[in-house]
Length: 346
Image (cartoon, rainbow, N blue to C red; front, side, top):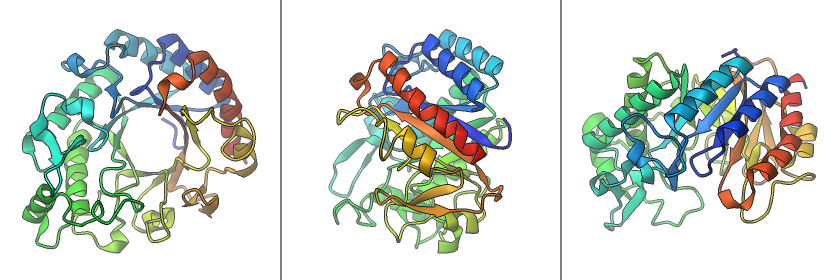
């Protein structure tokens, strides 16, 4: 992979894209100078690929190992690196199917089927095994750990945002890191363990920014600084910004959720003009322009020559996979891909 990531994320966890469709995308990416395809393999509703030894966890229409081998070979021919993503410890329903004991319970006893109880050594061992299978299938240099939307978001109610919402996480974090540890420290313990495991397999790692507490805020357990923080959102002005991550020693990727999210949604198709469209990307986006505040169309710019900004990604999310066919997705995506590719020369 070249030093600058010029990437596309494709959500195959929730929607099947035929290998021929993905190959066509890879060819188009190569033509446009885009060099990285992140495959979002899993989400709450499914695992979109048959992993060696774990085919029983995959969706019925998941990409087979043979199809993945075909796609990988084509990616090599097109000069595109593939970065696999298993999204944990949230959105993890298909990955822990049949193991209720690995699902996180809150202080009221409610089971959160899409969240993994990281205090369970067996659950964490299972995740490492899933990553071993992923690495066996993809042979990647870089992997994406997921890591989004596990703990409470700023808009959730007071009960959801209680620091003691998940007692098992707190107990584990405090046993490992000290009495003052938080649920965020439990998350960082999990990430640290997984990063070390994958580092042993020769893989570097990316991570969504949601629960990365910058070192400047003094967490007991900081996320390792060799993890590249994939910055897609900043929910409130008191939540960390890209500048906080840079000041804490992280390299960052720009996945600006207000400009670079092409979403298959029940609310309508991605726009052709206006906000959140290819036209908007052409007029507004730069690789060094990060989200200021979510939904506010405010931006935080980093110096254009700051090489700690690893690059940027355009994300194709399939929130409502049946809302657009493959053909419709292809046609509309072209109106976004070209201006996105052009943003790297602006």
